[in-house]
Image (tube, rainbow, N blue to C red; front, top):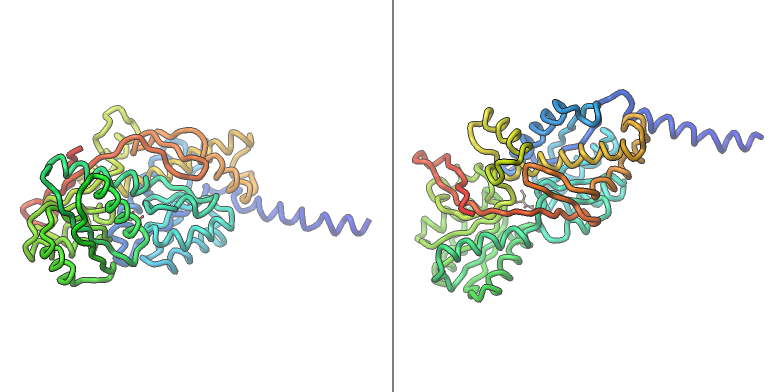
Length: 392
Ligand code: 1QQ
């Protein structure tokens, strides 16, 4: 008799503690992106995307009537910051899932922690090869470089059919840039072009004289830069200042208006592939609503990282609804560990009509997306502001 009682006790206690995590509160979703450091140039737009999504979905009933609450953790730009943020969100804030981190470089360190804790992660901007393969609980809404980056090359060749020799430059201390440059190099070769020089740098570099001198010496017709915002912007600037006149393709790390003050007038004409276009589909109602909200506040079109982060929150909200449907129970009455496991499953079922178009996540957590675009930077006469003109 005694034995039975002792055996039953911990089970009862566990159930009570676990249920108290969610009961009576809005549903907590973690947002772990870079709000400080150089990487904040990229992460800033993700914070906005998340905030706009929270407002939008709560105004539309949240999760079958229960509001969501986003819990923000600043990861900074490095791995330690991302790990710390993930641990806080998982253990202290008891979130149902995490949107983040900003960089693939951070994801390779932080995502395994969520994976081990069985907490679903949706990467809003992790585009390196191998992200969904980190683990069962890791997915992304940011299409991989392998499908996005080649679009920029195709567009440039259309505009400059005479291109033969190419310079490839990349930040070798960053997982995404290494991955993206690999894709660029493969695509260049596949298109029958010649890689005349490969130049490496660090995301912390500010002086690119050595690399630029090599590019000029190689007499190339095209330069392809894979860097994060600040280093990439400075590299483009120095390429132009030292006399490079050909077209420049920038990678996803240059895909933010926050580089405009870095390269100034020299940003003009940089060509960047896009996984989002604000005006691609006039019938896309959720995109229209998101664009309107953003335009009203910021007086310009929303950028890709903003739209992707909105999309990540949307996937969580819709999958949470499906979890309630399957369990015939409110999320707030369910055990947190079960919510996390079921949520991860539901994320990978069905399709989502999002601002970036119709998408789905496969079993592995990889995004399947229908359309990609290419934009060219057009600077304003003040040389500090500008826009992304869609050319495809
Ligand atoms: C990655 C990226 C960055 C440019 C995101 C901001 O694509 O790290 O995967």
